[in-house]
Structure formats: C-alpha cells, structure tokens
Amino acid sequence: MTIPSRHLDATVDPGDGLPTPPGKRAPCGWSIVGIPSTGVKPVALRWSHQATGEIPSRLRVTVAIDQRGDSQITVTLARSGRRIGCFDVRNASVFQPYEIPLLPDDATAMLSEGVALQLTRNSEPVWIFTGGDGLDVVHLPHALVPGTRDAVNEFHARFASLASVQQFGWMEGCVLDGLLDLAALPQHATARSVAQRHLALFIRNNQLIYEGPKSDPCDGHLDTIEGTLPFAAFAQLYPKHPLLDMALAWWRKETDAEGAVIDWISTTSEGSYTLAYPMAIIALQRGDAELERMALTQLRLRQQRLFDGTTFWRMSKPTGVMGNRNWARGIAWHLLGGVRTLSVLRGRPGVDALIPGFAALADWVQKFQRPDGQWSVFVDEPALSQDTAGSAGIAAALAIGANHGWFSDAARTSAQRCLASLSGHLTADGLLGGVSASNKAGEELQRSSYRVIFPMGMGLMAQLIAALASKSE
Image (cartoon, rainbow, N blue to C red):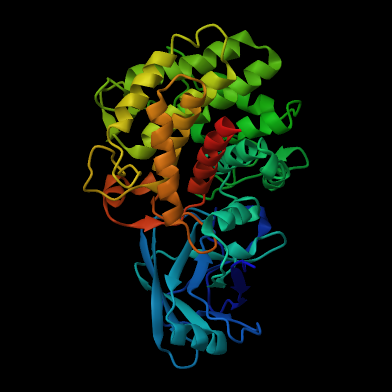
C-alpha cells in the first residue's frame, strides 16, 4: 500500500509582521503577513501535530502578494536560534511556493521548537499566506513529509484541487485549460468540477473579483491581454454567462490598425493563447463569424510579426524593437495558442491557410530539444538551464498538432520525450519544479540557473498529459 505525502501545517504567530501594503490585496480575503526585517519580533511558525516517527524533508511558505526584487528569508529555530536555511525569493508571483530542504536533526528540532522567519537581505518584504476559509494546506506554511506514492500520482492529487490555483489571468488560465483537458479523459472526469471550484474563487455574485499582476484590485474590469485567457474555460463551463461580454468589449477596444489586440504598442506572443483561443471558443458558441476572423487575425499577425523562419521573438514594437529572442515560454504561447485556436475552428474559413506556418514553427523548435527531453529557457542556447514550464507548453502544442495530423509523427515523439523528463522535476508531493522565474525581471534572471516551483507549469504539464492520452484512447 502506498502512502501519500503529508503536509503538516503550522500555527502562525505574526509577531511584528507587516500588514498588507497600501493599494494591494490578497486573493479571496485570505489572511497574510509580511516577513519583517531583523531587529523586531519575527514571524513564528509552530507545530502541534503528533509527528512521532515522521521526519519532514521540506519547509514551505507561499507568496501572497506580488513581489519585485530579490529577498532572503532566514529561518532559525525558535529556542536555540540555530539557522536551518534561507528562502531565496526573487520576483515571485502570488501562489508561488518556496521551500528549503531540512536535515533530519533540524526537522525534528523544528517540530519541537518552532521556527522564526526574518528578512535578512534586501529591503523589500515578502508576504505569505497564513490562513483562510478554503485555502489549501499547500499554500499554508507547512512541513512536507514525503510519502511512498509515485510523484505523477501525487501530481494529479495536487493538480485536481485548490492547491493548483493561480493568480487570475494567464497563470490561472493555464491551469483551467489543463483541468478541462484532463476532464475529457474518463479517469479524470472530476477535474471539471475542480475547474468550477477554481473559477468560483474569482466569480462571485456574478462579478469578476480578482487582483492584477501587481496584486492591485481589478474588480469588474480587464487591463491586459494576458488577463483574458481564463475566459476560454469560463466560456466552456458557463457559455451563457453575461460576464463573457466583458472580454468581447475589451478585445474590440484594444485593437491596432491591422486588427491585432495589443498591450499599448507591443505585439506579444501571449496573445495567440490569451486572446485568440478564448475568442475562438466564444465565436463558435455564438456563431459569430466576425469574432472567428478576429481570432484568426491574432494568429496571422503574430506569425508575421514574431517569426521569420529562423528566429522567434516574444515581443515586437512598431519602432522595430524586438524582445525575448527564442524564449521557450514565448514560443509556447504562440504555438500552443495556435493549435488550440485552429483546433476549435477547424473546418472554418481561413484555418487551413494558417496550418503550414505553425507546422514550420513546430519543425523548427524540435531541432533545439535537448537530450534530456526539455528545452533550454532560450531554446537555441543549450548551455542555459531548462524551463520545465516552457518545455511542457511547447510539447503540449506538438502533441495537439500531431493529434490533428498537422505536425509530423516526430512531433508526437518529441512530446513524449518531454513528458518522460518532466516527472523528474516533480517534488515528492507532485508540484512541478525547474521552472524559470517570472519574466518581470527581464532576461538576466531567466538566463541564470535560478529555478522555482511554479504551479502554472503544472497546468501546461496537464495539457501535455491529456494531449498524449487522448490520442492513445
């Protein structure tokens, strides 16, 4: 009999911890605390669990407010003051867990004494979740006790729960799409109700209640192209919901002269996924030919502006400035959004003309797949570390395209190799590590060896699992 991993949640003493910063808000009204600097009473974690014979391997906290810059949270035993580790937090996103490994003696002492958390590098504080109704134990400060259950099975247990919830926008959209893709498989049918539970966190009393990329309240309105990806899942679950019109109005307001929906003046590859895909779903549901054409226009213009056959750029400006050359996640957004959109609209006018361009991109990116089955964070630079999220997104797109016969059999084999490799980056309780950090700090952090646990990558991995499984059934 296999034993699942256990999460021993801590009781939090906020000490002189900082309140929520002005103009910011934690999701869902959940409780948070800011880790203070040294010289004041620290945030303390204590355990009352009967943990005889259980030795935790990790201590975790989860970020609750968007964080910019580099911070170091030092962890010391509450009574002896002995240092047992540091959380290295850099440009973290909300719902991003951080962990430190525990030596057996430190783990035992931690459960007995408790620990103190203080900021010891940088002046920028870090806010963590401390409690709240419906908050998953994975997001609470906790000690992880590994079980004997296979990491992939643990992945499915964590993913099909509120442990995989992400900030509303592109991150949560990746997760919702993964849940609905898995729900199409009989063995994962309950994932559909999990997706509904996720959305219920943000849609309350028929109102959109959420925080933007900087943890600023954005209730009732949209502000970036990345924020509309969840409307793809929303439309599938609630096709008659009046809030869908919010996305339609925003898309039509933010178009440039050629019909691309853009952020300010930049065309970004994210739009192939965060715009074209939900547009296609709503267009098909409503029989809206104009919206169909608008969805395909997003793909066509991004293909023209971002990929010349030898180089892929995530961002292009009319001034000629280009950014994020051959970035794995940038490629994933365009390729995944493309095959998903074309899949929804297959057989409709204009679709067949776009398939060769995406097939060419699929052939091109496969040439850079590493021997370990992943792609480097910048795909043509093999000396750099992998990005498991970008790799999962690319592989999911390859598998979907191969399923439709648009891509070669080699694309499917490439996707299978990637999935086999991803399991090696799962934690004992099934969270996906090895992800390059948020791109808000620019390329320097991406190019470093710094990698994190980032649940939006679990959504991309779930999409890959579902795409490969759906063809085999």
